[in-house]
Every structure is written in C-alpha cells, then in structure tokens.
Length: 39
Image (cartoon, rainbow, N blue to C red; front, side, top):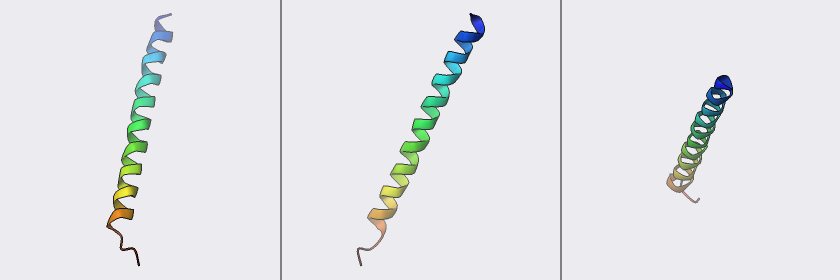
C-alpha cells in the first residue's frame, strides 16, 4: 500500500515533468518558426 502510494506520486511527477518538457519543446519550436523568415 505504501509503495503503491509512492508509485502514484512518482508517476504524477513524471507526467508533470513530461508535459512541461513537451510545452518547452513546443514553445521553442513555435519561437523558431516565428523568428525564421517567411522566404
């Protein structure tokens, strides 16, 4: 039971960090596309 709770917490932390990583990558890609010239 205790180990399961720790696993749940670890999983949520991993998911949060994963989403933050995705948001960071998406933001950098958006900025790169916005900064790049159209032509």
